[in-house]
Image (tube, rainbow, N blue to C red):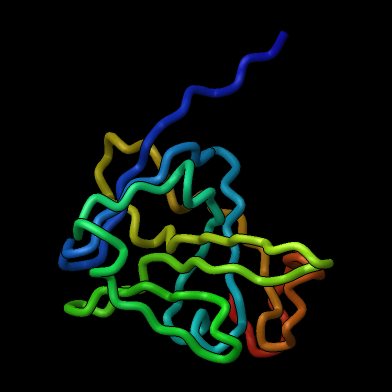
Length: 152
């Protein structure tokens, strides 16, 4: 009988700490981190990890998501949430239709991790997958190397 690893909660924030949130259930030994070559991900330099917004995500400040500025573009499927003071991209959420079903998505910028030694998460161990968002090829899944226009 195998046991699952203990659940740990990690805290994240923008640079000025106006936006603070926590993620529970992140596996520090095998995080599924990705980069994307779409314009917003590339220009904001974020590294994303997906999570369950309703189960794993807790907004610590401000009091509600309504107070977190967001930016939408293209088909407006995602809300890209950022700090209105320091500009750091913190997380994104939204939904899209696939094979007649609504798929809810949530990802957070792992680079917003609060760098406290007791958190026990070492960003140097990230192994990245690469989305081809510029080519709108999300359904192909992440690749081992960046697509055209992407960076390591």
